[in-house]
Length: 303
Image 1 (cartoon, one colour):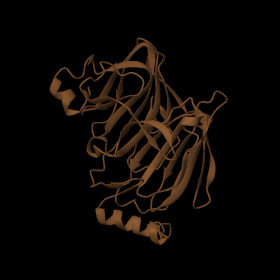
Image 2 (tube, one colour):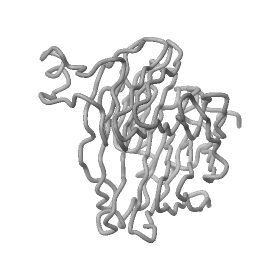
Image 3 (tube, one colour):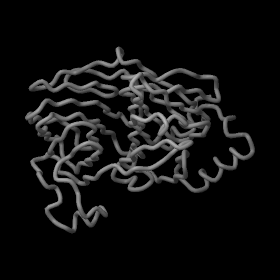
């Protein structure tokens, strides 16, 4: 059974043109989360806190995964793509060699705009591939039924006999939106070679029989958090250690969480803003190309 390696609350931050959000992880500790780079929780009930959105900006060397619970995001890019990611839908964008796009949030009738954006790294051999989109609406995402009334929307990978619609991703990820009723314990197998984390966004849960994962003060100090939570509640990130299964015990109101795993790339990471490469030289070249107007001129590795 996988023990808890890290447990921490997402931190408020601001991105884009003034979007208030909470960052679960990002811009550090790439080794433990490899192949994932960043997870932002941009749930908001006040349109003034998010409506300015994310105007035109570049990406290279990564994949951005946007999953919506409420409201929508209108998007467009430099190569002519446009559309709307609606509640329950997912967009998996492979930036590859380079893309410039914008993402503009739209509230639902209650003023809500609830969603998450996950960044996944690309292997060195794939960083300069041709940009690619995979978009699926809520009705195209299968729901898997688990033990004791548990259920999961399977965006990518497989769980309980259901396969997610997103395919062909090199890190072979599993990305599910997991719901567990109150007072239920269940085990979910995860292959040993994978890194895996959970992000609770509703209700509460304990993991791996650890009511207090920081029984030793040195562990709390290690993660620069002197008052870590004793259970995972809303906006709590849980990073798991090595093992082949995760044990979840839901709280009195049940729990809803994102559960994500992937095969580590174990490659060097050179990261600045929206561009992630393998070396400082590649990073410098990307920003030089942005300045010179040649950022979007690349073709895919296959021609």
